[in-house]
Every structure is written in structure tokens, then in C-alpha cells.
Amino acid sequence: MVKVIKSESKSGTVEKFKGGFGKMSETSKGKLKRNLIIAAAIVLIAGAICLNFVLFADKSSSQVYEPSGGTTQAPGQNTDSTPEEPESYFAMAQQNRASAYETAYNTLLAVTTSSTATEEAKENAFEAITVLAANKQAEANIETLIKAKGFEDCVAVLSDGHIDIVVKSDGLAANQRAQIQEIVMKQTKLTPADITIIERAS
Image (cartoon, rainbow, N blue to C red; front, side, top):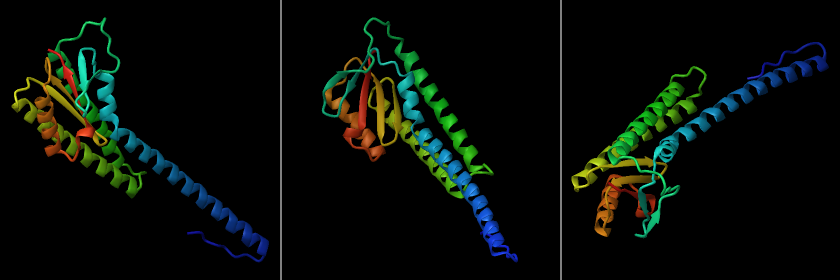
């Protein structure tokens, strides 16, 4: 609220009013800028898990199965490199995913306890934390159910309406891919088009 101070001079009154309005604008601009920064951070964090997965996942010995049922070579495949042990890959994937979740959670938690963040920014951070927790639980459920179907190992990464699943296998049959898709669809609201299955050769 701008407080108008009257004076004997009309021009003086106008100048004081304009001065108060200028201060209010600077303050509003500062809050808006801070809110935009916080909102951008939340958006980036929402995709951090998926980005982390893309960065650490070595698909040099993998095949990607598209929803149509076709098989394509994984991006960045290097046939000259020696593939790492599958056990090491899955252990690394799960460890890096846990680290990404911890980083995202701590960053969002800092927003919810910040004295400078607006209530809207805090609410957005709380919502993002809820999404992270739900994704984490869904990933754990999916991995458990896939292993229960007889697969030796797998890792699932759910983010922004899409899921990537790396399965330890020497060759997935059509019915096995269908089993994995069915598990995912029961645990999430995703469709086959939102599911990417990557085979990790043993």
C-alpha cells in the first residue's frame, strides 16, 4: 500500500507519491524475480532424476525396445568399448538415482523453510516433494514386481510422465516386454507410449 503524504505544494505531493510508487515497484520486481528463480529451480529439479539417469547410464551393451515392438540401438552405442559388468551397472544406477533423489529433496526442503520464499513457492516445493516421494515408491514397486517375474535385475527411472526401465536380459521376448509394460501401467497412469524398455545384456 502506498502512503500519500500531503503537503502545501501540489507538485510536492505528486513527487512524494511517485517516489513511494517507485519503491513499491522495485520491491514487487524483486519478489517476482525471486519467485521466478524458485519456480525455475523446481522445474529443473523435477527433471533431475531423468537427466541423472541419462548421464550415468552406459547403454554400450544395451538395446532399446520401442512401444511398437521394434528394437533399436541405444543412443551413443560404442561397439569398441568394453561393457562393464551388469552387476556393477545396476548397483551404480541405483546408487546414483538415490543420490539424485537426496539432492532434489534437500533443495526443495530448503525452499519450504526459506524465510524469503513466498507461500506459493513453498506450496510448489511441497508438491514437488510429494511427486518425488510418489515416483520413488512407484519405482521400487515396479522393480520388485519385475524381479518377481523372473528377471534377475532391473532399474526403473520415472520422471515427467515417462519411465525408463533397464532390464538384465540376453534377449527379451515379446511376451516379456508385455509383462513389464503391464506392471508399469498398473503401478502408474502411463501408457505403452510412455514406457521405454532397455535391455542390458548379461
